[in-house]
Length: 367
Image 1 (spheres, rainbow, N blue to C red):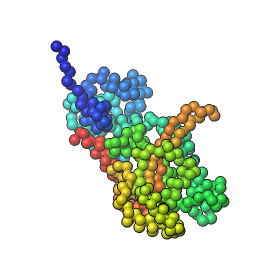
Image 2: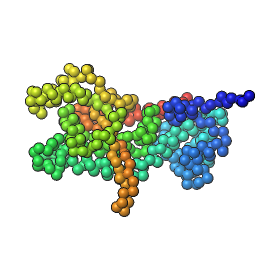
Image 3: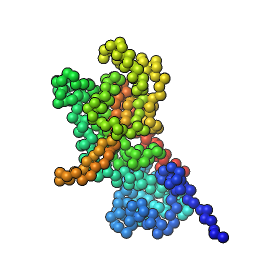
Image 4: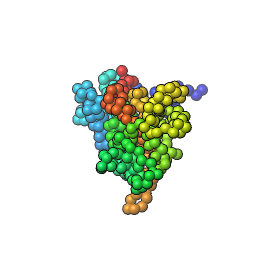
């Protein structure tokens, strides 16, 4: 009679067939050097190659710095044998310390798991196409928008317009209060974001790069969107619908409002008061589109979407290869922008919530 093997590593099995993140398992199951080196080789690092070992130590240092300088832990909080390379000696010891079956102290297991979680996310954050081609990506994405941003030296206004045909009265020109290109996220900020959001994977960080348009009013928010489409600054088939948010003004309600504005031949100066009143009276009929994000305050009002740009990498004038890269576009009015810079919707408050969530994630399965 054949013996039936009923032993399974349930937490790890759950990451493969249950949709759980590897960051959320309580520990590894590594109890021999052979298992440790084989695990790392499959993961992508060959312990027989000094270059790979040094790379792991590099991620170890980055993780210690992240925990102490970004997440607010002190070096004294972390067991010294995990911090000091001279005491740890072998990077594979982290794998042993993190494995519950080896019966190391609770502190060693807890902190080694936290370090491995940070290391894992750093590995993913620094080994993607953006890390290798950030300059090409930024230039090809941002230059398209910058061609249509005009700073009027006489009026000191910022205009979104077709600069080459700016004298053509038929061409749309929209006054902006601000145009901002979001600096690409550093590895540290990417790691914190990934740790803070259980649903976020390295390949799903879509806002490493982005642009923000701030308009005077709600109507101009939609005018900017129309301009981007009419001028083919964005390609709507490349938009990722599941990443879009619009808690500023529902599209269908805006369609109804525009029809009324047409019938009444409304002037531009009257649109803001009308749209705010129309939203207040009829907004409950439509559900706002908001992608779930525990760190973003619900009162942060904007239209946000992720679209993709086909990036072309050239060498010596010849195209080597191409790939799609996602980036974020935010459009908001003046009121939303002012709220974003103060109170619970401010960027500082958002970052604090993100850090708090990341710290909980680091230790949630080891306490």
